[in-house]
Length: 73
Image (spheres, rainbow, N blue to C red):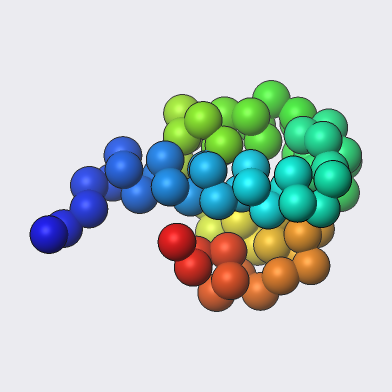
């Protein structure tokens, strides 16, 4: 069964939130580490936007994981 784009974005957002919380980071902390607005982190986690690979790379670096690990849904 193929996953829809919306479902994938939701799973990715949930994964980012889980990893962020495991590292005891707030959305503000993660946003600061990525040099992004806090609102953007929230929108990614809620699957409201389809972000760029460049932004996902910043997030993975801030979480000290590989991009591959970030996509390990």
